[in-house]
Image (cartoon, rainbow, N blue to C red; front, side):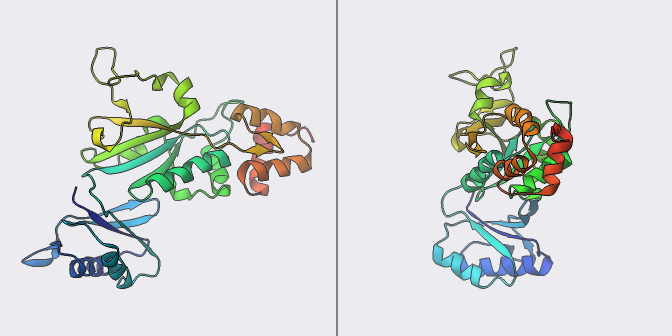
Length: 295
């Protein structure tokens, strides 16, 4: 696509959008409005993301740092963020989804999400997708309980979406135009290696039993990406390693089995190590769902 500039804020209204378009028009050579109607914008779109409401204007030129600085100086909104493409971009919108069961969600997962925000946040909407499905022992936590854990690790709750199938997150993707949106699911290297749904061929496309290309394909970068109408994509991210009470956190199963065996003081320290912060509420969630041998 042509280059773009985005204004992200929770305080957008018709007046602020018009002022933003006017400032961009002043400091670029791009045509922003129709010649006969200054309120009829060309290639201006509005949409909502986990970070706030967005106004995005497509431009016909590269922007310089000086141009962006001048635009930022003239925006009269208290709290906002500017994103701009300084190099050639694509027509597609990128949506990145980090799916999982998360029983429990912990700071290792938060580390993955923060990596995705750093890697893709400037060009994509980044979400966490998880279901509300529960079953004893294996999946004890409700969506609301997992959300409390996510908030304790510092995850923005607006970026978390309850989905029926996290790896086919229609509750997220249905908000976007499937003709110009590229959807990328990000899973751990462990999940990619062990989950049969990600058993992609070493070479060539992932095929269905009838020999036709499957909808889910392995990510090979923007140059080979097609919109959601045709495919969605999967890539891997390294798992963030950390210790709990001085020992490596190896798996969710190990975490669930270990917690009830600890003393009261150890459980509190366990919460701090597991989530990066402490909360009585999350401690009680863990005790209620995993048991407490101190009772």
